[in-house]
Length: 116
Figure 1 (cartoon, rainbow, N blue to C red):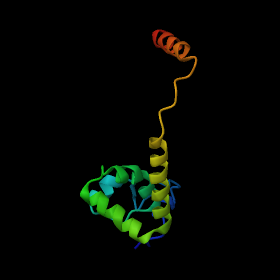
Figure 2 (cartoon, one colour):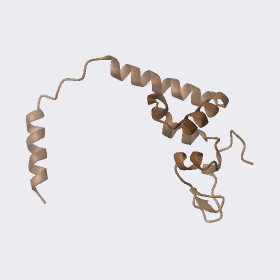
Figure 3 (tube, rainbow, N blue to C red):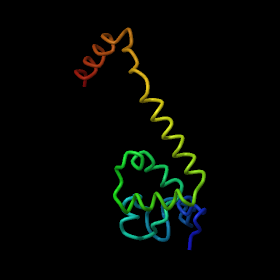
Figure 4 (cartoon, helix red, strand yellow):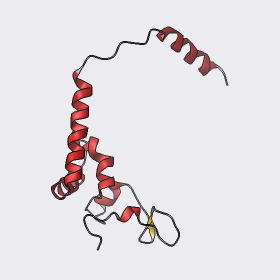
């Protein structure tokens, strides 16, 4: 059995393909969790769903797998705190003003769309 701290997704097989795990290609985090293949998330998999976790956009099974991983993994708890702080910081201020050459940029984009 793969240990909690071991990253099976980064091991390579004799074929040299890092996504080829245990005789088959790796699937999405959601598919793997829903199929009960291995409900223990790896750190890399948690990082992929961290924002969705904070937004409450995960299924109950995915959320449970994320909570379990967070309970066991200090580095991912710190990472989640950093993501939470970044979202808070970016959402706390006024939106940036448009660039001074906004009309030129829009004109260039319109021209580029017409050119094949």
